[in-house]
Length: 397
Image (cartoon, rainbow, N blue to C red; front, side, top):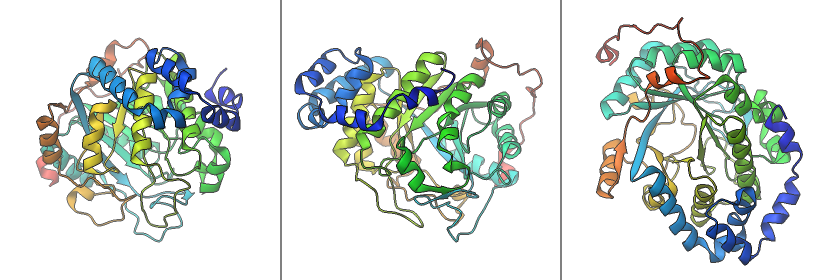
C-alpha cells in the first residue's frame, strides 16, 4: 500500500463502532495485563464503554507508570504563534472560516520578530507556527520565509498549516522545520463533508494522505489528532486516529509521533458539538493511547481548563502549551479575532511554577537542529545559510 488511504478504505466505520461497543470485561482486563502488547485489538478494548465504566482507575495507574518509565517527570512547554487568520475554507466550527465577517491579518516579518521577541522573553525555545489555509496569502514562500526568519532564535520550529506537497515539505525541512501537525478533524467521511463545506480542506482524501507525504519527506515529527465533537461516535474517531498512527509508525519508523485531543470550543460562527466529550472521556483517551503506544508524545493545549490540565498531567501528558494566544499578533496585544476561546488563561510563569511545585521538570528545549545532520534520511542542507548573523530581537519591539 502506497498511502494510508488504501489501508483506511479497507476498514469500515460501522464495523469498528460496533466492535468497540461489544467489548467484554475479560477483553479489557487482558488488554491492561498485556500493557499494550496486543496492538490494535487491545487498543479497541481500552476505548470501549466497559473500559470507561469499570476499568478507568487501573488504566490510569498503568498509564502513569508507563509515562514515568519512558519520559520521567518532565513536561515540554511550547507556544503557538499565529501568523495569519486568512483562510479560503468554509468550516462551520472555526473562527477563521471564509464566511465569517472578521478583520483578516497576516503578520509581516517585522511583526513576526516582535512576537518572537516576546516569546523568547517568556522562555520559549519551541514555537508552533499556525496559519489559516490560504495558498495565495500564506503559501509555501510565506511559510518558508517565516521559518528562515525564526530559525536563529528557536531550537524547535513546528507548523500547523494547510497540507502541502512532499517536495514542499522537503523545502521547509531545509529551512529548519522540525514537526508538522495535521489533524484529520474527523475520520468519519460523512461528518467531514458536513462540516467542511468549501475550499481545499473539503478534500478528505488529500488531507488523509498528508502524513504519508510528511513521512516520505523525512520530517522529524508528525502530529495527529481529531477535533472531538464533530461526529457522534468519538470512540470510533479515536480508534481511526490510533489506526492511522500505527500504520505510519510501521512504515516511517524513524519518525516520531504526537497525539492531541482537542475538544470543540466556542468561536465565531460556532456550531453545537455533535457529542460532548466529557472530562472522564478525555482521561480514557489519554490512558488508552499511552497504553497502546509507550513512545507517543501526548499534548494538551490551553483549550482545557487549568484545573483539568493539572489533573491530567500524571496520566500520560508529555507536552503542553502555555500562555497561548490564538490570533495573529496576539502576544503584542493585537485584538484581531481568535480562532477559538482558550480556557487555561494562566501566564507562562504561573504554569511553569505549578509544574515545578508538582515535582515536574520544565523542558524548554528538547531538540536542536544540529541533530538532523546525523539522520540518514535527512535532506542535504548545503544550500541553506548556516552562518546567518542573528539580528537583535530587541529592535522588533
